[in-house]
Length: 107
Image (cartoon, rainbow, N blue to C red; front, side):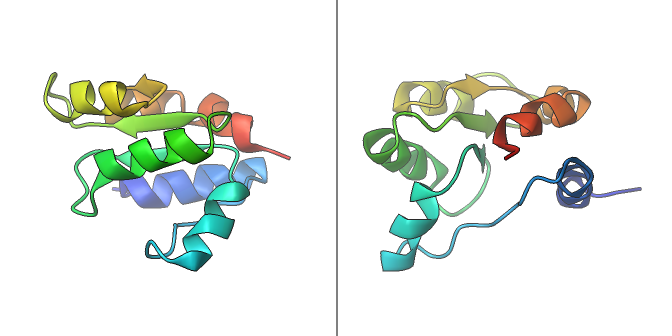
C-alpha cells in the first residue's frame, strides 16, 4: 500500500512538478509562498492549517488553495472555505484527480 504523501510525491515527479513542503513560518516562509503556483493544505494537520490559508489568501490572492479533509463533512472543510480555500475535497477525490490538480502547478 502506498501512502498518500508518497503517491502525491510520485505523481508530482511524473508530471515534472516540483513539490516543496513549507518551512516553519519564518522569513524564509515569505519567499516560499511567493513562488508557489498551488498550495495543498491538509486540514487535519496540527500546524494550524486554517491560519495558513488565511495568511495565503491575504498575501497571494492569485495562488489556488486546495484543502483536504477526511471523508467527513463539515468542521475543517467549512472553516477552510470561510478562510479562503478555493476548493475543498475529500482525499479520495483529490487522489482520483491528482494528475489534473497538480498540472496547475506545472511550469
